[in-house]
Length: 221
Ligand SMILES: Nc1ncnc2c1ncn2[C@@H]1O[C@H](COP(=O)(O)OP(=O)(O)OP(=O)(O)O)[C@@H](O)[C@H]1O
Ligand SMILES: O=P(O)(O)OC[C@H]1O[C@H](OP(=O)(O)OP(=O)(O)O)[C@H](O)[C@@H]1O
Image (cartoon, rainbow, N blue to C red):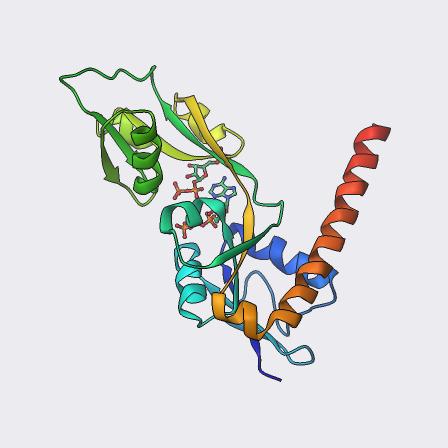
């Protein structure tokens, strides 16, 4: 049996994914959040996890270097890879929002400038609203852009809202909800269909059980 490779975004999504895999009976040798290793193996079920930057997960999966991947919907919207998105994993929840100091001021003589780590998402959103924008790509600390006069607004991820608040910004409009997704290479979906489906069914079962427990806790409190 061949190894099945899973590309996993380093960082925020990694430990929740590893927890989920452990709950379905898959434990990777030597896995720890603090390890510098990039490949972890589970030799019995022949699974490999490779840790890559979030932005590279769709690339690994589209090209077939990984059979499956786990990545945020934000990255999928920005990258538009030719893969199957087969499951919402329900964690890594946050949203895309437009944020700034003030309401959006769109005038005919001033093109709105939007700073973002996600310029395609930003452009698409404003295009659908009929507003032409100039986008400025930034790789982090995006909240600084309106404060420093670099842009009128930003399009960024908002989770707790703390970063916006502590920098004197506010949400102007919400764009869409985000969560972690399971993606699959199109060829692997056929050639490794049985193993992929079993993994998905096991994950669905664990997530459904967790959902029921959360519901019970909320009901009791
Ligand atoms: N508060 C949050 N900020 C950013 N991403 C979040 C947040 N909450 C959940 N996520 C999800 O976690 C994913 C990974 O986020 P993380 O910050 O680890 O990666 P990243 O932003 O690509 O990192 P970096 O560019 O710093 O390497 C995001 O793509 C998003 O789907
Ligand atoms: O609503 P909050 O809970 O405050 O989370 C949102 C913040 O977290 C992310 O930044 P990250 O920590 O990834 O740093 P970055 O600026 O380097 O992207 C995101 O870009 C926001 O800045």
